[in-house]
Every structure is written in C-alpha cells, then in structure tokens.
Amino acid sequence: MGASWAGLLIAMVGVAGTLGAALLTQNRADRTKRMELQAATEQRREERGHAEELLRAEQAGQCRRESLERRRTCYITLNTAARQYLTAMTNYLYALQRGEDVDMSLNNLEAGRLAYRASYAESQMVVPDAVLRASSTAKRRLNAAYGKVRKYGAAPATYAEELATLEGELHEEVWPYLGALRKSMRADLGVGEHELNGSA
Image 1 (tube, rainbow, N blue to C red):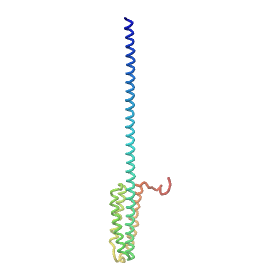
Image 2 (spheres, one colour):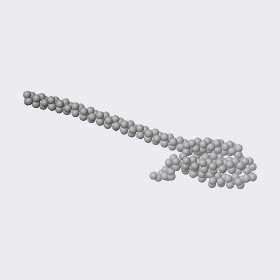
Image 3 (cartoon, rainbow, N blue to C red):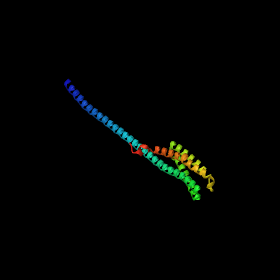
Image 4 (cartoon, helix red, strand yellow):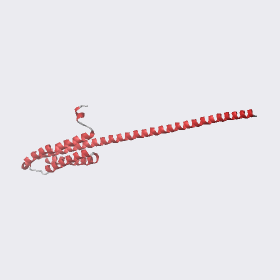
C-alpha cells in the first residue's frame, strides 16, 4: 500500500506541476500582453502629443506669417501715404510760389493728409511699439509742417522768403523722420542692409 500511495502522490505532484506550469505560463503571457498593450497605449499617447505639438508649432508659424504679412501691407500703405502727404505739401508750396494751381494743390494736400491719417490710424492697431514710436514722431513732424504750410494762402509775393525757408525745413526737419520710420519698419520686417547689398 505504501508504494501505491507513493505512486499516487507522485502522479498528483506531476499533475499539479503540469497544471501549475500551465497557469504560470498563462499568467506570464497575460502579463506580457498587458505590458505590450500599455506600451502601445503609451506610444500612441506620445505620438498624439507629438502630433499636437507639431500642430501648435505649425499654427504659431502660420500666425507669425500672417502677422508679418499684415504688418508688411500696413507698412507699405503708411510709407506711401506719408511720402505722398509730404510731397503734396511740397507741391502746394511750389504752387504758392508760382501762383498757379493753388486750389488743385490744396485739394491734393488735403487728400494726402486724409489718406495719411487713415493709414496711421490703421498702423496704431498693427505695428509693434518700436515702429509706433517712430511713426508717432514722423506724424508730429508732418502735422507741424502741415500747420506751417497752411498758414500761407493767396498773395505769395508777400511771403516768398518764408515759403523758401519752409521748403528747406520740409527737407531738413521732416524727410529724415520719414527715413527713420522706414528704417524701423524694414527692421521689423527683417530687411537689413546686408539684404540690400547682397552680402551674406
């Protein structure tokens, strides 16, 4: 009887070992599968995060490009309007000195002033502070010159010397500020001397 119990005990240990090995193998397979699923989930999360980061970077780049284009358009309009305004002042002075086409020159001056005011108002909403400071300084110079120019009307012979002096003031006291404004706008757009000269 001892041998049959021993055989039975050995058989039970064998069966238990076989069943235990199967359970252990299944448990390890389940754990491996869970780890693979977790790794796949983590990889998808990282890929999604990377894709979102790329999308944010692309959107930020698009916003920068749109802002740059908006400023470029504004700068072109402001520069053109300022130059035309000052040119209209000069033309008005010439018309006064010659005594010809004074009314037409005055109308052109007023149209130039209104166009400049509109472009300046737009620029206040678009341009950065550095350009706004240069623009504000140029505006003050233009407005001061306009005030001086508008003091004169008919009968230019009585103030011919003042008109000649005022013409010189326009070139010395206003044009440099328009140049400084243009330089600040170009700097904001990233256009510098090395681009103009063709050097790297």
